[in-house]
Length: 69
Length: 280
Length: 220
Image (tube, rainbow over all chains, first blue to last red; front, top):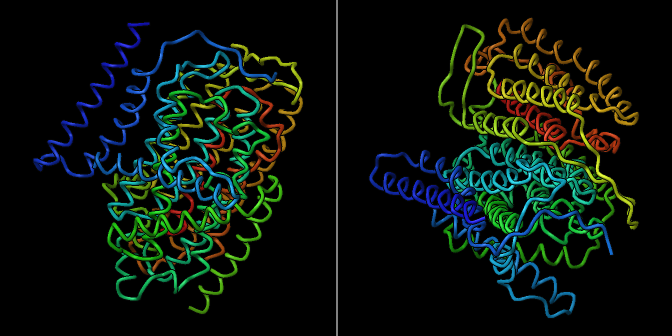
């Protein structure tokens, strides 16, 4: 389980870093605004989900769907 | 831009919170605090999460990413003054996301929510007619040209009020607890999002915040013109409160009635657009 | 002569005479979505749809057999390719061709399920799609006959070429017949078919071709 969390943290950090680099490049005038926005559209969802999955509580196994009481 | 994105998520969720609070006060309940939806997002993100055994794994996770991605793209198109047709397309594709949420889990409740979401595609047609009416006047579908037109001729809200009503109904059918929100009605537990729990639901909350922000911002921009950001935000709060009144005072329609009512409105809008097209 | 760039200013146009591919912000965003969902169809394992009696506690999970899975996955991927093509093509003949392919693939995705109700729904949908090819290709033929070109760029840049309104209506009618799938959802039989990523390709491709035909009608 710790291995999975490591991958998620790495992916979260990677997409976060890409977004940061994109911001710096865009401020520096190298990357056009549309390019930076394309980077955000791809990286932001992955970043959000990875960060959430990384900081969530411990994991269990799979479950059967809820079928009523 | 990333700052604006985070602001849009937070403000959109705050608007949903105001919506809940207003509905509660109208119905003489205390209601949750206005920041409840933001707390929901954080709370769900800390919950223990996995993929259900019956689910189609990649799709189950993928639609959450797609949901956040398409609404971030819609926000950027809106801010850049791009084509309103792209935002319309993203709105239609949100149906596929709902459908994907529902069908990927293997749960019958989710499946019925997803099927209802595709059937209620009828509610998307009024939006398209209002776009057509706007295009009749401005001769362009670019949001920047629509703003320019309004700088010269005054707000479109007073020029084509019926188109504004059609757009209002589309936003209404996307608000929770409304008369047309059959995709998440209580007889289906939570509709299409029944099986998306924990982190997946937190991701859905992020996309919901963005969606609310984009749709209300779009309404203000298209029908009031390019007013300063503070006034736009105030207008969005007023719009949310008016939506809350409608949601609080009307019952949820049955799927059949919901689609029928929307089809009737669509028919009226088509006639309106045709009359304007001939005489204007 | 239609409206100027309803889908934004094109990034670039790849021309082979009348046959052309063009990428505007609108077509590119639709293309990327078709691509993403096709990738989902390639890598996702199918759902195991759970059927229950509402309010009861009896339930069972439907399994998708390997042979059925392979065929439906093939059809879903073909459907994804056809809708990607329909999104970026810039000439009307290829557009109608891709749309009729989408219709065929949608029938294939549903018809692979060995269930009487699903088969019945697929058969009816197939008949609608079949008869819709007449207005669809008829519209393309009429456009070629009245204007002498099938290139959308030519139709929109040349002010003297006007497409009659009735031909545009025929084109929309044809697409509505081919892309009936999302509205066919009103027939619940279609969703007795398990296997999430594949059934979603039906509704995705149908909604995408609807969105594209709106742009086409505005452009020409």
